[in-house]
Image 1 (cartoon, rainbow, N blue to C red):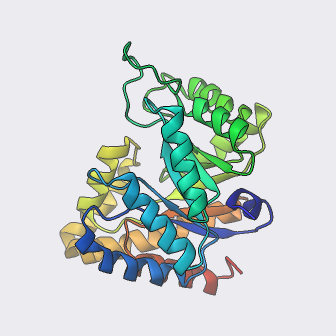
Image 2: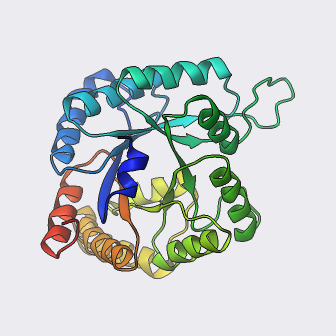
Length: 292
């Protein structure tokens, strides 16, 4: 059973995102954290291409370790802009060899306007269609943006783009991080009105330090409510990152509970490759009756 099938049969699940360490000497620390989180029994774990230039080989290695040694199903990120069919086929084949049968189809950072680029892949929707046609046993997730994609001029335009991805064969959506649950529920409602009912998994980033929050927000372009950001800054001024982590734990716990109470099928937690916050969150939420 692949991840896409497991989601359909599950209720109030949680999953994690990991990014591969860039340097091999960091693997020991990474695998220790990943194993701690694997012991919490997530429904699946997503694996990115990694930060700062980590190679596809690093990602494949992480996929294999978490799948085969830790027993957690994997959703592997796959970007496509500028890629060749051969490179896509090779990566999907190597994932299959590692026991992975699900991808998160992404556009990526390649040049969409390069006239010398002979790739057939210009948007994530192109990858969705290609993989769905050629690899019928592969589950396909796509990324969603409750606050709107940075390249979309309006929310309505972004919804149209996302519906195109869904119509070409994607099985479910994982959203970009957000901090206002109303954005998520409005996003799901817009997709349902457009005729698409594939599961939409909200992505949640527990705030663990002021520095990491600023860095992530700068990278992904998501927005944060002003009062929430002020609360983080006040916590930092009062007690540094230890106080920020406590503030972030309380907010994430309330956010996840609100999402699940409102009907979200589960939550996908952006771990930043850190275990303690996620262990505490899942334990606390289970004690409150979630994820049972």
